[in-house]
Length: 348
Image 1 (spheres, one colour):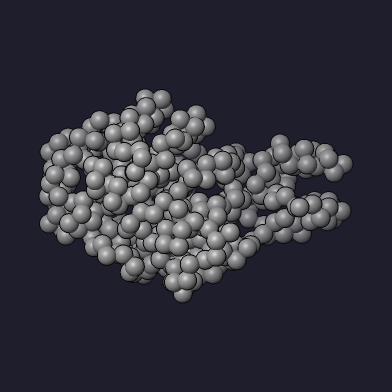
Image 2 (cartoon, one colour; image 1 turned 90 degrees about the horizontal axis):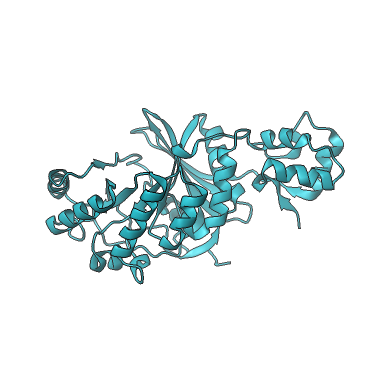
């Protein structure tokens, strides 16, 4: 079976070339070509023709296809649906900020976590993405949009810590100085709370920004919204967050989708403030994007205002995420669902 060459680091390409009787120094050339977003070995014009043919015989290289593309007329946000080599599709979003352009990528096709307000998990998990496929999301979003991308958030379809090994390799690839060279401090990873991987994450990517999708500060509400909380619990999650912060020195962010009548009461606000103070976390409130298949609605402006006032009075650093792409399929999974005609993809 052919190897996917885009998932290989330079030293691994060197070893592969040596096994083919080729000089190792070609590895740097190949790696740089790959990270420019070439779609075939024939595009590597400074390599000998015989080597390009040999690469085609032993390795795969695939350019994802734009299955759908939406551009917001309000703020220029771009949402892509990329078709992968096996026919599955994932979403990627390019967002413009004053501090630079950010790409939000997916880490899985579908998701097994079952969060009650999320479109990504409808239909369950199909498969995990390969490191090369995550890298393609960044490379080809940059090439197609023409926008230089300086920040990455793993906050699209899927749970990154449920695809841990592939995500860690992707981070090494995208951070490599011969490639896109995007620094770890410019990369955020969002998790629903797979605490069993927090120590591994702290060891392998200590400069990363960790965002925890909290969405409720108590077990009753959180377990109803997020099955991942069952068997773990908020207290254990807080202990893991505190340990992560103490080990890395990197402040954690709590992502909190404001859902009308579910998690936006004064009681929730005061308990959330206590949780944030426990671990020194920043709270990022998110106006809920309505998903057609879900019954939830975003909090009212009045509830949002009162919630913020309580958090600030309790000494918590709080921001409200700017709502981008309001005129397109803004919520993760919506574009994929619409293009699939609401038919869940075949499980593999």
